[in-house]
Image (cartoon, rainbow, N blue to C red; front, side):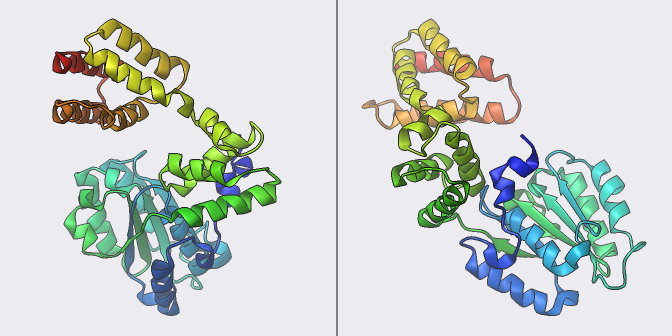
Length: 317
């Protein structure tokens, strides 16, 4: 699928005024644009899919005009998170040479900046100081606490809020009408529920579900693999009963055959715990959290999830 055929790109807002559900932030940014030369470095924080990157790109267009691509460096810091990225790419781009006199400054957009190493962040601090006269930085982070204080203090921080359900549904409805896709409200609500307010994820899910026909609750579930969520509850009960092999086989089937991700498996497992009537709830939740952390730091998913099921068997005894 080419980028142009992806609805998430096709329907990405191009102007600040089109940003959804972030009125206070948009208002503040428009005020900064009245005197562009005095605009500070910016830091956008908030959960995924709430408009942080889109807002940064809209700013680039409004400040730099038709030359925005030439004078904007957009990097995903989670892909290039080390000090070499800062020295080789950011430093070379941010230097003064090649700056058009009609352009107020160059712009560097660092997406997922919270994934940068501390050494890279420290090196970036020096570059920000040295290039302040002709370069501005926009740092985007899901978790601002992972950004070192010296960088935070050099930026105007904007905290993006989760997009309201009615706003997400209204935008999905607008896309359906433009794409001539049949839908019902229950289907759009299911998209919002599954994506947990992530607009980007909602639009991607909408496009995937459209291939099945009408955007209905059942089709959304089929597209997202939600029809197998009930099996996670069965796996939990089987594991607690000490039937490790049976529980593991069902878990492997969910992940390898039906395509449920390991992180989603743990998320649904956590939800199913609250449906159980058990005195061991705190022990179960603690185990899930422990193995969730192990997956985040890069441990082998199948081994760790099998170990989790074994631990649940011990808890259930």
